[in-house]
Image (cartoon, rainbow, N blue to C red):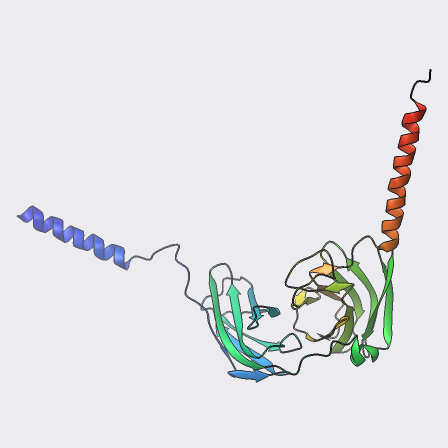
Length: 287
């Protein structure tokens, strides 16, 4: 009898110990985030705040997803030593649908959170061409991509765009700047040169919904505002004095081989075939 009682008591202690012990491998609780308002309209700026409880040094990423499932904004936020964070999101032309937008945050691999807001979109954007905004950008930078010369219109205000180049490997446009004063750089990106779609493709003429470009200023991701039209997407990029480089990432960039390059390559292949054929004929024994 005493042995049974002792066994029961020991079992009870073991069960209690297991119940109170921490369970490793579980997903950490969700991140609580709030916005400064519940509803917004086109042109508003959204302030997002929250706390991750414990700062482990990981990066905090933010995505905004439209009611149709398209990503309309992406960015990163700094996290304070106490785990608090705050960031702002500018609404723009990609926010073209009325309804509930989902704001998602991710910290490391295990912590995430989300909230929803109501958004009232503006009237649909003009899609009849590059539009008046691009026409007002009187400066143009010309450079060569592959065998094609392309031109990008811009307005840098009191600051200077030094150089532009297309990075075909990363599908990005790299812009060297000389920023003497805080301000904005407005740049019209031709869709046939660089675009960002929800379907990744080697062609900038592919179908798919627009998604936000990823824009880095000196390696730091920044929020931008955008006006999207049929032939071009115009970005307004805030810059601070001393900035040196802007990099704009899309999902496609003009093919490395332009029309002239393709023709030259095709002609070279034909020439090789012809020469090879003649060589084989010349070494055939003659009787």
